[in-house]
Amino acid sequence: MAGDSRVEPVRHLVEPALRRPCAVEGRVICAGEPPRCSGAQAITSGGGGTRLGRVESDRAVLAARIRQTHLPMLPSFISGAASDIVSTVVAESLATENVTLTVTITSRRFDVGPRRSDPAASGIVVTVTVASTDTESGARRHVPMREPEAWARAVFAEVDDDTTRVYLLGGIDPDTSRPEFGLVAYRFYLDGESTPIRVPPQLLNVPHYWIGPLH
Image 1 (cartoon, rainbow, N blue to C red):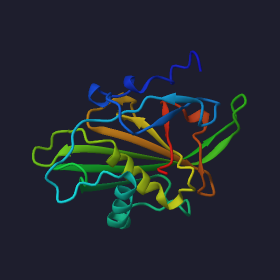
Image 2: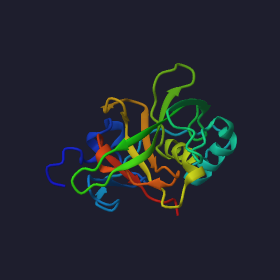
Image 3: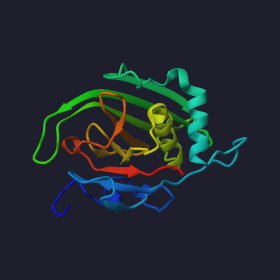
Image 4: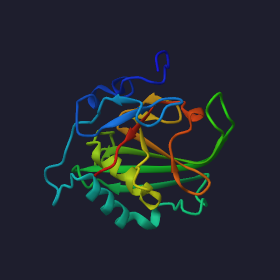
């Protein structure tokens, strides 16, 4: 991994407010290596609601509630029909008071040829970005990482094979790779049979951090 500029500590990918340790763990996915290649620093953000009727903090519970509530607006990836789409869901935060989340789900097909020892691969890449804003002012805010992660898991739940190949990209705009306040991005990859796969090394244009299973 030495000399690979894409393999960086997480602290270089996100704003200072995301540098405090938390329980969200990940692994750096490096070109040509399996998903256990290197430990990555955990990241989180400040904030937290105290006046909600019930503040959900468990990621599994959050993901289940999100999927149950917003299922009609979430794209399906079982048949592969959801390639090359953009879907947006706007929802109030379940875990932080006075925060509105704008969740953008994009998917596109990929078809990459072999490169050195990396085999050719094709399928669908799905990107989930979660932007958090103050409900009253519209200004960007940070929220605890558990809720953006729960949204990514809710989107992915339909095809989850329990290896949970969800990748955290960090607090960046995935199109530009530039840090962006109040935004968190995730990705996952499916083959032509809608089976979750690890990120093809040919598509590692930004660092990917593998999020382990919830259990």
